[in-house]
Image (cartoon, rainbow, N blue to C red; front, side, top):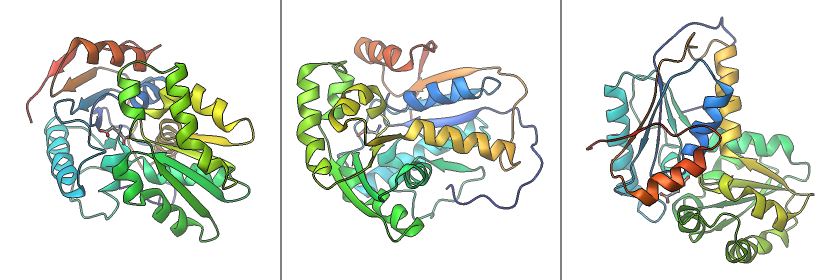
Length: 276
Ligand code: DGL
């Protein structure tokens, strides 16, 4: 699990792929961001589409799924795993996971970015029920800066709307307004998009919060963290991209369609079906 990096070392080479997993397709927003920022890296993405959503499940169930996903990626010899799902990252924050390669969750980099951009330290968080009810961002933000005040709101309807492809739609915009406006009444100056599906709704969320509230996107935060760790010699760098694989536990035409849109302008590779 990510934490403050130790003293700087020299960058080093490691040509193994980076593994990522999400409950489904939301984490593709992270794959897309990492693919463009790290053009020499190879990636293996696992979407547990057969068991999504994770955001409505208990921490025990999510933990079990997370272990199975990490085992599958570990068997494919990845050099590190990005937990490209906030709901799954939430259950990893207690650092009880034994895994032979580094694990990057999306919560800590997102919280750090929010503290960098916020001036009032009144920070809003939107996410799934699992993420918000575990107070995942609140705990990390408070640990990093006890002066900040965190206001969270679970927005369970947003994930299915993204999966339906209604990303720039008046109905979705109304629902965003309904969820987000109470946070604005708390005077937040920063809003964390605490679910990897939400970057797809960035336009609508941005219009609701207006220009005075900064949006923090987990995909940008984790990408910045990886770039910094590679430059600082804390994580290996590859010299040439050799593969991009997308594995899922279920495939359907709707899934492929939405996944293609979430990945754009990057191309979605052929999806391989796997069993966990
Ligand atoms: N992408 C997941 C997240 O970041 C949400 C989807 C789900 O509930 O499975 O929390």
